Length: 246
Image 1 (spheres, one colour):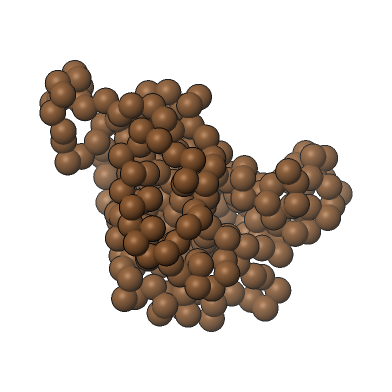
Image 2: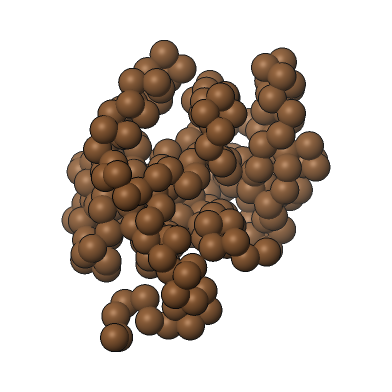
């Protein structure tokens, strides 16, 4: 029977598609990385996607986010993503949460997610595409405590070379300022391993007009072809892991 996943099944096989259909992936952060990751996971046939983000689409998101259009400005990112997935893959179960992730609310958030998951679905992976270090550390700790696989996005801002992005354990990272902070904080929490998507590219320090001035800005510059590639790489890693493909 021909369906939206027919050509995917040619690569993953019926068993692989069955594993994806029975899996749930929790995507934290539906921005430049997370929106493209969620879309790719849906297009591969993941049976349930849980989308967590408290933000709304803004004008400055349009340069890189899958859900960002002039027509979606001001709308919750999770709901726009849910509608897009419904139009692509109507049988995919999408659960949304518009909470801001903090260490003290993570247990309650996952309890709510588990209550909404059907018995046939289990959480196969957490995809961390959040910007804040505190939230990333909380997710890494939760994943370790509950034995849930996790993959985390590191810094994609102020970078122009998507071909340098890669996936490895955080112990193998270098150059990336966020990786450096995360390595230190994870070690302090006795977390020795974390799968991450990162780049050894030295980040630019753009000025108000985009020139490299050597001064830091609180808000990083971004571009259409770096964060999406990170999201696609992470989605691919998750799909291969679920299907048992090396």
